[in-house]
Structure formats: C-alpha cells, structure tokens
Length: 83
Image 1 (tube, rainbow, N blue to C red):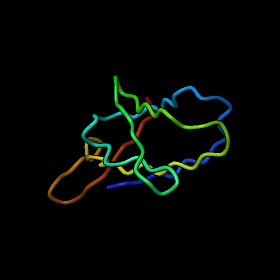
Image 2: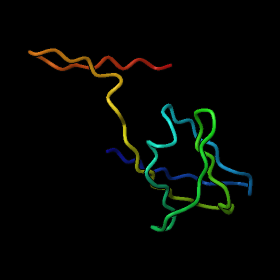
Image 3: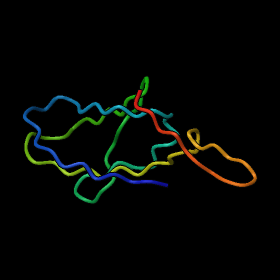
C-alpha cells in the first residue's frame, strides 16, 4: 500500500483530474480535511469533484502493485521509466 499527500491552491470549482496509471480498484481512498471524499476513475485518471477554490490538501491511499518489479530466486529489482 502507498499514500501520497498533495498540497495545492485551486483557483476554480472545476473537477481536479489527476493521472493514475493503474485501475480503479487500486485507489483505496481520497481524503480531504481528513474525511473520505468522493472520486471517480476513468481512462487512467482520478476525477475529484466538489472541491472549492482555495488551499487544498488531499491524501490518496492506493495499492501500488508490483508490475515494475523484476524477480528472480536470487534478487529483486525495479526499473522505473517515466511514460
């Protein structure tokens, strides 16, 4: 499991769209003001609606998966390349 805290200033009431390479089952929660916040997932994006303008702090918990891990009997490594 992983988590990320995102702090930003939002200037409008439009939905916030974040890239998330994975699937919707990997997103465990989105929290705003330490409470669960509704989100949707579509085509590799988290879509977070109903956030006001102003300073925002979101916490997102997710299952990272192990798609980038290379395993053998003797070692484990990853090669992360931006895409």
